Length: 94
Image (tube, rainbow, N blue to C red; front, side):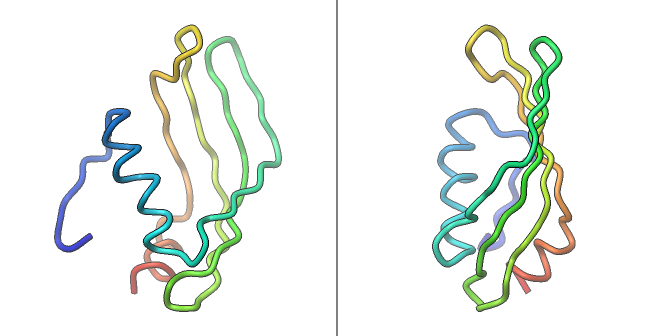
């Protein structure tokens, strides 16, 4: 955003400052996530879902996601997000 480069690795504070707020900046009314499946194996959790949003440019943004979380006790220590990044760029940033 605005020529800034961000690492693919954000700590908790960076994620809350940039990641969460970014969803509001690129959409009208947020991502509106729905969740379809959650599965876990010990401390590893996978969550499948989708977004149902409208970009600020008026284009519909409907993407599919897979989120991976790793827990240590009751804390998330690692999160990854997989989605169609081309769709994100074309709809939200072009």
